[in-house]
View 1 (cartoon, rainbow, N blue to C red):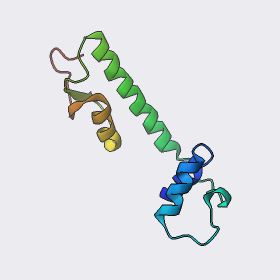
View 2 (cartoon, one colour):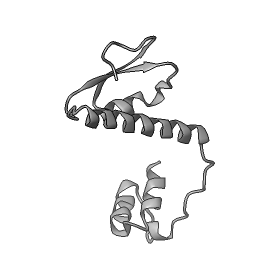
View 3 (spheres, one colour):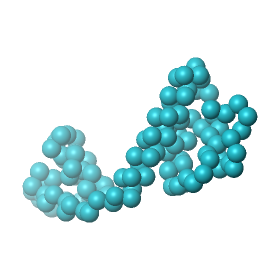
View 4 (cartoon, one colour):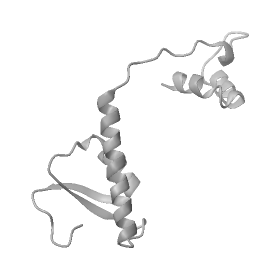
Length: 113
């Protein structure tokens, strides 16, 4: 992964990526990231992209509710989820929204938005 990132960033940050690339592993004389082969294109994971779009909607929804209810971002919230929910991105949602917990529930709690 590290090798791919350096090669992809090189056109935008050539001096920094070249320096890092040279320092990460021993290189042969004259070997340079500038002339290294670009990584092969991998197939797109449509499921991952779809799930991440859902995560973006969740994060956006929580931020909107915070704005509407004047809840500061520094205050932690507990998210209660009704219905099905893929838990793969819970750590991202928790971090981006400052959540103390993400719990599946059967019924909406009194006073919940």
